[in-house]
Image (cartoon, rainbow, N blue to C red):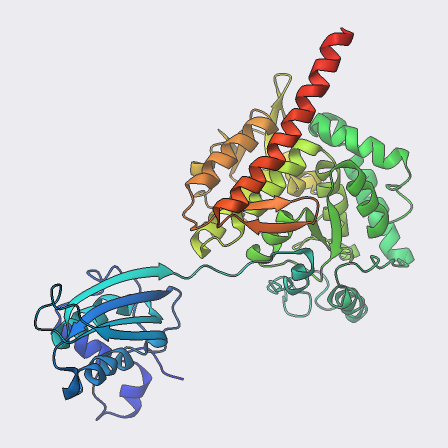
Length: 471
């Protein structure tokens, strides 16, 4: 493994010269700023930003190892060649040149400018075109089995501030739940859990305490869904809800389903699940010593915070739209989308009948923050995706800012407009029949999508005509 330029190798071996890349930067008069890089350059290319570079150039007298000299330049910048092609130069186009070359290679984007500058010294008519690497993303439901990378900073085995850090029995129980999640595969029946007396008591305490606050602070969509969950016996204070029962309820209401997760997923994996109307859900409960607060998502947060809102069709579509926008997005856009998710799905407020109500799961599952959000301490701002995506947030304390939307339809449209501005070299479509993602990369695929839409519009038009006749 190579280290950062000018760091340990040079310190360990004083006679070592600067890297070839650094030499080239000085020879060509390129600073980090001029090459568009604000971060330090590393020999190992460990920074994000790998790009594909298409090079076209001409060589005079190729018999004198001209091509080999050009390839040495690519080697110098650790470019990985995936395709190389040569042909005799057209005399009318490149007079005096014997060979035209095309090379496709992958390299760190910070090296691209320097590579071209060096290649220009040994070849002629050098032209380039770059292709940014698009992060891979799941295309079908089975691919979600690979979306299980966890953020472990709040894990009770590692976080000394976690209420369960010193409780060996609690950590043993958490390991049990983690194994259930890691062994689960798409299509399996969701695991049923026999919760302990202590876990059930924690659920009951949280449920009763928060249930008393909802009539005053929760939005009407939340209240309506919660009442249905209670009516069907899925939510009861004396029993922790089972994932399969909740998933069946959601499937009938909005098409969302659940899958178990061992903890807090990284943003890219979590948002990818939402694109398929799948919600990753923890099954463990918070530590009983801190029943009104959990530093990580737990069953109380998922059930009391998220499930009632995911039972609302408009809100479910809003959640899926965030997920769809994340597929193939850059790391920078993932950060913005996860921030949008934080200030809406987790800590969002909305206007209803002239009053502000809560719809965010982080609020509706936290007694302290739900009360705090309706004091005069935090700042309220209207929901605007552009501004919201850049707002710093707190994951260890109460929020200093909350964003208030007019309604979910308005938020959904604003999110779609925001997503359309994101730089993504393709468009996608969710196929609800197969539960898969289709990349619209051909005219035929777009035509097929239009055909489906036209058929649906004809059906809706026919239904509207029938309704008008009856009236």
